[in-house]
Image (tube, rainbow, N blue to C red):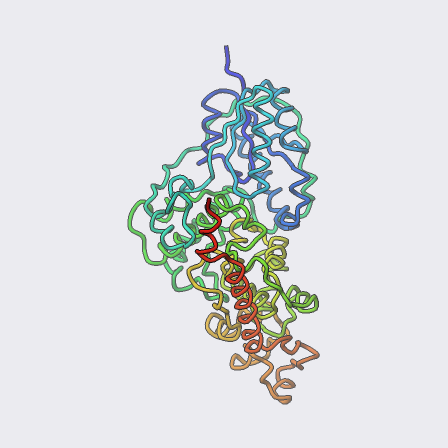
Length: 481
């Protein structure tokens, strides 16, 4: 007598190799592979990116091709996952549902509801932990509360073993059932090739062409192809962190460039662990002192920032790239985020949402962690007064202005000596560069030096108010029985 089928619920793990839930289910018997289109999730503010949806759809289509080649098929069902999975289990006679865990508050709550619904119907729920190198339980930190600073976390994480390659199942015994299709994701063309083969090609290019070995030298230069371009593939699990580690040469000694890149993978997992342990950071500052800051920024300044019309060329270049490509160089992400919070005095959560609206690689934990790091409200050993000077950053990481010229064509003829701060051009220089300030390109909407002083005082006030409202040790002692 054959074993009852198991359902494998795909979410952010769109591959067939290095996939523990799929391998285990296939070893046990017939498998029903499903992706649930959750309208509630798609309606949330963090999941409105048209380019990310198009890339997701292409990734799901690629996954279906991988499954078909092995005798399986991806079933798509729309609706509340708790109801959909129970109904699918009844329809197919499945005895269990297997899936990788997630860290976002919505995902955790959804999985809790799914587990409860399955249990009520006598169906086993098998959650396989996070799709990461290390689980939070492997890096407990002081007092089993994790690490609030990256460096000590990274030391422990670097000691974790890289999982061995888990081959894709050679054959998948599937169960026939109807599929709803992917039209809820739209029909836009994907901005990138999607799927494990595409991810593998990007990874091979990054390593074989020497980009990985030069990563430590080139990763901050915005005008060159010095980054891996793997972030979108990692976001949807079209490749795994362990696959990247093995490709880099782990276990074993890494070159300086490869080690610097592996450290970025560690940053990714640091933020995943952090949100898993502290889900409230999805909507609030991690540092209590900065949860009630009074932000003074204006809607007009926000609009200028969104559309790349601030008058600061490096900020405008980054925001225009984001809108056009659904991606932005990491150095520019930090510069633009710092400008919104520290120059325009606009709540970091507004910027976080805008980034998520556009980024193909938009990930709730990593996007949140990056914004809170820049805003000085999150996991960072440095205090809030780290403020990126957009002109100095521009001169250092785009010295000839090549990145700026690509995304801000109004400045194409401005010489490199003036392109980082064109407001210093004389009228004759503006005419010679075919860039009249206030007409072809805006004057700066704020003065960086003035705004630096303003935002520092804003943070200081928030810090003083928190200290004032925090009971002293004596006050706390009197509350004890």
